[in-house]
Structures are given as structure tokens and as C-alpha cells.
Image (cartoon, rainbow, N blue to C red; front, top):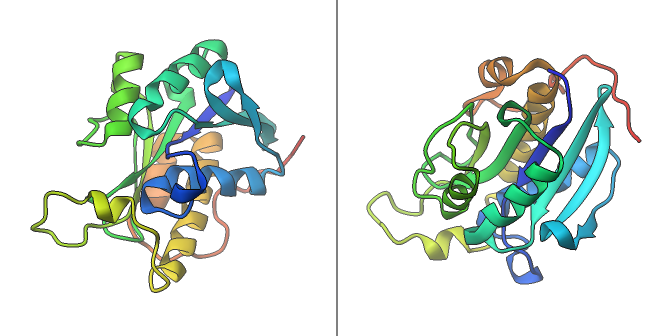
Amino acid sequence: MNGLALIIGLGNPGSEYRNTRHNAGFMLADLLAQRWQTAWRIEKKFYAEVAESRFAGRRVVLCRPQTFMNASGKAVGLVASYFKITPENLLVLVDDADLPLGSLRLRPEGSAGGHHGLESVEQVLGSRGYPRLKVGIARPDQGRRDIAGHVLGEISPAEQPVWQQILQRAAQQVECWATEGVGVAMNRFNGSAPLGPDESTNAQRNTK
């Protein structure tokens, strides 16, 4: 892959949402910023926080919309237009209650699956044809339809070990996507395999 990569973590701004399951996209974007040794800055014209760096010689831009989850598309549309991003160079990071805790699912395209953040992105972009990485947060009860309390609830102490492991593995998958493409990243990381050595890429890391 080449060209600028735009990676967008979806979540809700504000300290009250910081450690909630629905903010998996924000948490993963934060971890990537740490791995790539970059810092966030507010970009009011995008209604978002942005961090820029380089990974394996490729320019990468991280984005966290500050519009709240249900209006994420507003920020995504603005930043994607500004950087002239093509769909294959855009990756959205998001939680998914239909996946088991500890599971990852990267897809090159697909439906929103009832996720309001993805629905907003699709509405603004006018397309489902962009990669998305879903981080499993599981459902509290398979028979329950209303799971708002679960997704907006904080990650429990019992979940923390698995949660930290899945974020590390997801970061490796993003790095693999950025260097080797969506197909390789899907085959190598999708599912709930335990975290092993850092297998994201053998490329030399370069940071700004």
C-alpha cells in the first residue's frame, strides 16, 4: 500500500465516556498514537482531534471525531475531503457488540450493522465501500435488544486483561493493514487468537 493513510477511531468525547466500551475506537487510536510517538491536537475545522506521524515510511493521520458517536460522519467527511482520501486508504475503528469480547473483525466494506457511528459515516460518504476494524465488546445477554447500558458502561476489572490484549492485537492489525493491505491483515489477525509476538510487520518503524 502507498499514499497517506487516514485512520479514524469512533467514540464519544468527554471524561464520562473515556473508559466505556463504546469508545473502543478512541482507545485504539490512542494506543496507535503512543506506538507512533505522536500527540493529539484539536482541529476545529474538522470537529475532531488529529495526530500525524509516519509508520514504515508511510504518512499516517489519526482522527478522533469530537461530534459524538451518532454524528461521526460530519468529522469523517471533512477530514477525508481535506486529505483527498480514497476509500482503500481510509480505516474506521469501532466497537461491535455482536462480536465476542477479545475478537477482531476487519472487513474491506460492509453494512453498519445497526451501529449509529458507522451509519453516520456511510450517510456522509455515500458509500459502504471503506475498510472498518471492529473490536468485540460482546453483549451482556444474547436475548436483550436494548444494550445501551452495556455499550456505554465502563469496562469492568474482570474484562481488563482481555481488553488490553485485544487493543494490542488490534494495533498490530492496523499496522499490518497500513503496510500489507486489508487482505493480509484480515487473514493474519481476524478472530480471537491470543496475542503473540508483535507480528504486525517486519518493516522498520519511522516516526516524525
